[in-house]
Image (cartoon, rainbow, N blue to C red; front, side):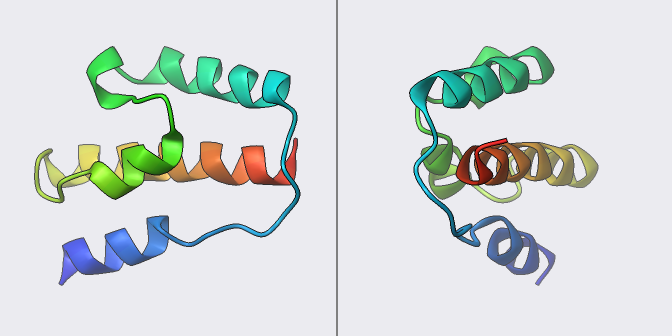
Length: 79
């Protein structure tokens, strides 16, 4: 149940306009500082879609998913 709740929370699609490529790259660069290279793919949406629940310890998993979702939301808001 925990996995389903977390997955549902991080897969919400933020509304907003397309951000500039420069800002998107800046957000991804900031995220790359916090996460190991193997945890990131080029498209942050793919990070969430391809993530296998339970592949990390719970606290690490929650932090990872929250960081990626926050980056996706920031890009969607454009700030």
